[in-house]
Image (cartoon, rainbow over all chains, first blue to last red):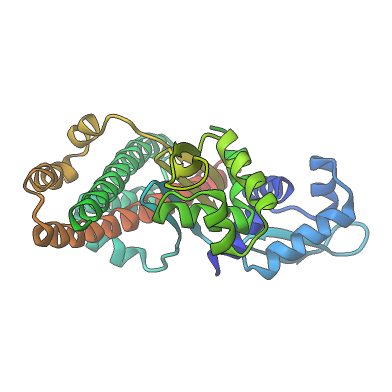
Length: 165
Length: 165
C-alpha cells in the first residue's frame, strides 16, 4: 500500500467517519448512509475507493426479507505514522503479520505477550479488563520512547549538519 | 492541534511536498515554487494554511540584494499516528516537550539517552553515525512492540465483544 495514496484517502473527513463507523461493526450502504446522514451515492463512491486501496472489503449476508446485502468491514491491520520536525518529514506504514516472531524480537514486551496468550485461553472478562489497562500503559510508555528516539535522531541530524558546514 | 484538521492538511500531496522540502532546509516562496514547479500563488496559500495550523512559521532574512525574504521552517515536533483495524480507527497526535522526564519514565531507553547526552557533548561525527544506527534499530524494535500491543488490544476487544454477546 502506498503511503501517499493512503494519506490522500484519509484526508477526507467522510472517509474517516466511514472507517470510524466500520471499526465499531460491519455495515451496509444503507446503515452508513443513515448513520452519517450522507447520500447513498457518495457513500458508495467512498467505499469503492477504500476497497480499491485494500483497507476494507465486504461479505454478502442474506437478510430475512429482501435481497442479500454487502456488509463492509475493515480488512487490514495498519499503523500509519507521520513524523514532522525541522529535520524530518517521514511517512511510514507499519504492517506486521507474524506476531509470535515480533514478541521474541522485543524483549520488553515478551512477558506481556505470555500473559496475553493465557488470557485468550481462559477468556475471563475481569482478567481481560485488567490486562487491557496494562496494555494501554505499555502503549503509553512505547509512545514516549518513540518520541524520545525521534527527538534524539532529529537533534543528532541537526548537529551533524552544523559540524559538517 | 486538532487531528482532523491536521489530516485534512496532510491529505494534500502539494502540502506534503512542501513539508518534505522544508524538512531539508528553510525555504522562501520563490525557492519552493521553483523546486516543486508550482505557481507562487498556490505555494503562498498552502504555506498560509500550514502556518495557521502551527506546523510551520517563518523568519525574515535579509538578502545581499533586494528586499528581505520570509524563510519558512517546520516549527513543531509532531508524531501523528493512525491505527486501522477491524476493532479500531484511532487517530492520535503525540507531542512531548520534557525529554529528560520521558527518559526516566521509559526504562528500556534510559541507557540510550545517557549515551546520547555524551555524544552531543563530544560531537564526534563517527561516534554519532554509529549511534544513529543504534537509534534506528531501537526505533524498529519500538515499532514492532507497538504493532504487537495494538494487535493484543484488538484481539482482546474482539474477544470481549464475543463473550458479552
